[in-house]
Amino acid sequence: GAVKVPGLSLYCFAVLGRSTPEAGIVRRQALSGTGLGACDAYTIFSDAADLSGLAVVRLAPFEVTDSGRPSVSTFVAAWNWIGAHYMWRIYDWVVKVDPQTVFLPVELKVKLMQHVEGFSRVDKTHGIYLRTCLGSFDMRLSPALEVLSQTAAANVAIHGDRCPVLENATDEDVWLQQCLDGNGVVGAKVTGLLETDGYCSGLTATPVSKCVVGKVALHPLRTQAEWDECWDRVNTVALSV
Image (cartoon, rainbow, N blue to C red; front, side, top):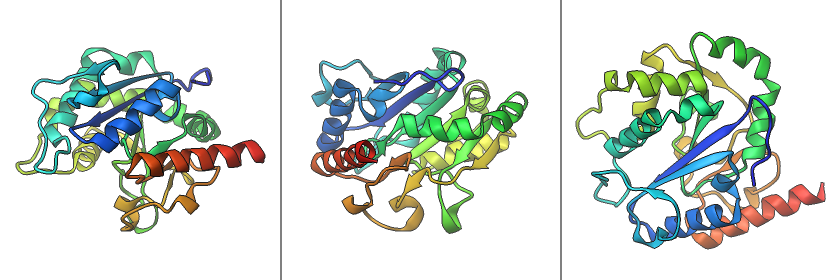
């Protein structure tokens, strides 16, 4: 379950379409209080039938791409829902987690705590989001993990209508970063957030051997078995150090 840290509460959410492996991954997190389920609060946005029994928000319409992945417009609708329900007022940070990401909320709180004084000063005026890509892509968000401060999330909630979705746009992280940058939100680089992300590094998968303690997130783990093994390895190592 969630580890409570004053000033560092996390509201997390995931958006997933009709993908059976991803639905299984998210179901495990919700029922076991791991990953997404270990945030202070979370919401699942989905039209997947095999998530029955969980508290799922079904956006209308829930648009998907030809591959069955949620469209940019669906992610925009999720942000609109978050804004309309004032989640950004209740929690200190808003975190979007891709279903294929092994995410450790406690590790994120540790990272945020290391920067809390500087972040607090900036957040009062501009808001902050974390640039989660490393290396040559270090100026970018990764769709695997999107971390926004309260003020940054408020900017998206209040001014999101100023951030048009370009025709044929397929990358929701590009829309989000353009929206944040366009509204004066500051992008901060924090090391050790994301391990071997296929989007940032060009790799197509995260080897399970990379699943070690100390990272906030690992991506992509594409199947239920891969996600489970990675989660178990991370926590086994964490308990042994």
